[in-house]
Amino acid sequence: MLVANKSDGKRLSLGERWEKSDLIGIRSTEKFYCPECGEEVVMKLGSKKVWHFSHLAGGSCQYEYDRESKYHLSGKLQLFNWLKKQGINAELEQFDQHMKQKPDIAFELQNQKYAIEFQCSVIPEEIFEKRTKTYLHYGVIPIWVAAETLVKRKKNNVVSINNFLYLFIRQTRHSWNIPAFCPISGQFINLNGAIPITSKKTITNLIVSSLNQYSVEDLLSPIDKPFPILKTWQAENQKLKSRYLTSPGAWKNPFLKELYRNHLSLHTLPSEIGLPVRSSPYIETPSLIWQTFLYFDVFRHYQKGDIIIYAKIREAFDRRVRRKEIKLRTLPVAGQRDHRYALAEYVFLLTKVSFLERINSGTVRVLREIIIPDSINEQIDAEAKFFTKYRNEITQSIFPLT
Image 1 (cartoon, one colour):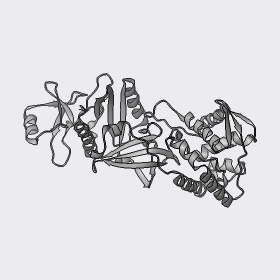
Image 2: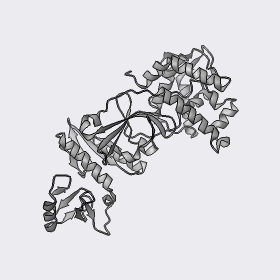
Image 3: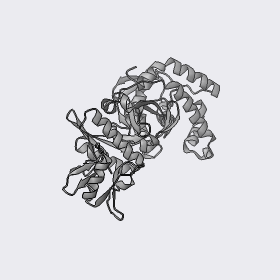
Image 4: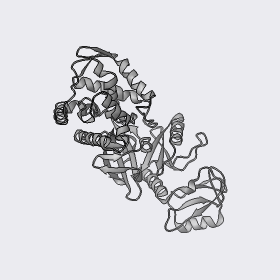
């Protein structure tokens, strides 16, 4: 930890500017104590590690800050100094007696309190949620900044985001954002936008900025920046289909079994199934699968001119969730929305590609049948024409500003 109490109860922060000789002098005449547990701690001023305080051997502090790595200590110290250079009165490791929590950095801007948590290691989802809810309960907006080491890059615009990293995701005005930071390079790595392909593989726009190029306004209110996704989406969906069919356990995959029972092939699904929707991060199950379920349970049972009550679509989706055939995500930082927005966006997109027509808020009309291709080549040709024809409609449903 970077902050400790002196014998008189006053804080001493190693995040401030100090000469080493001055700290050595203070250390020789002063004792230091953990702000949380009250146990004695030792000031360590090594040349290889970030200066910090450490509990004495055998201590029982439940906060366990001694496990902080050099990477973590350096990261939050750089973020703290970055805020200070912008004239922000930030507090480093200030324990809040009401919340019983100690954010890495706390500050106030325009009468709004914020807490920055620079998270380098995986913690249980329950702890992440509890900390987030506590901050929000006390009117503090949490900004969870992931260590760059948690971001697994696959290739351009494709990263692997596991369920833990998805906890960091927050909503911008029209999209998504996950902020990350690397103390080694001194760079912010922003994941702007998030369109999941699988439970982990996600299309996003990685924007790298140095500390000097990035402001606190950029961190608090990231700007939506549309980027091309459709070619990547189509290519990755084809890879997903091939991976399902060639995996060792394909013969016992429940989803593939259901396709077989319904006389369908994964490679000849119609283009209306497996479309990207903006709120899909709320759903862990790939769009290709949950949209296929909606086709099985709802859309294939209606013909041109039929009326579909939206509640039936929602009930079919919820039934699959209850049977654990569709998995949802908890996104504690993202606000009050949930998976129902993704479902509504998909139905709305089906109106934009002329399959459905909106009658009112609770009903839609079928405008045409969904055609099942007879062969893989026919599917490839139909999909190419579909995405060419509806490119703007699909893109604008994801990035409304375009």
